[in-house]
Length: 212
Image (cartoon, rainbow, N blue to C red):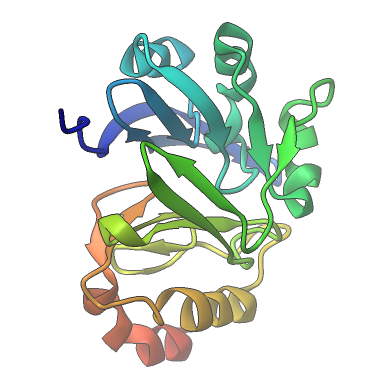
C-alpha cells in the first residue's frame, strides 16, 4: 500500500505583535507539514487551541520557529505542553524569545544546514538573518517550497526598521540563500499570500534602491 502523501496545510491565526514599545494587530500563517500520522508545526502563532485542532491525533514532531518575534512564538509553550513536542529556535533569536517567555527556554536549536525529516520529506534549515539575527527559512526541495517566515514576502523583504533588524543583512540573506533556489519554488510566508522565487527575484535591485 502506498503511504499517504506529505501535505502542507495553512492555518491563519490573529493576535498582536509587540516590539520597541509598539503593538500592532496581525494575522499570521501557521504552516503544518506532514501526513496522516506525523507533522511539524512552523510558527505557533496566537492560538494553541486552533493549532492543536489542526494537528489532530497526529504525532507532533516539533514546533519550528522561523524567528523569535512574539507573534510567531506566543502559542509555542502552550502547544508544547499539550503535546510534548520540542520547540526549536535558532540561538541568535533567544534574546527576542526571552522578551515573551522569560521563564521558558526553547527545547533545542535550529542551525544552518540542519535537516529535519517528516513523512519521508526533508526540511533543510537555511539561516537567513536580517529581519532578526536568528531568522531561518525551511526549504523542502521535494515539495519545491520554502517556508520563509518574515524574511521574504509576496512583494519584498521583511521589515527591518525595528531592533535587532538589518536591511543590508536581509538583502544578503535573500540574495544568497533564497534567490538561488529554483524559480518555481513556492514561498510560503509568515503573513499574507504565498509567492514564488521566480516572481520575486526580478525585483531585488528595486528593493535595494528603495532601501527598506
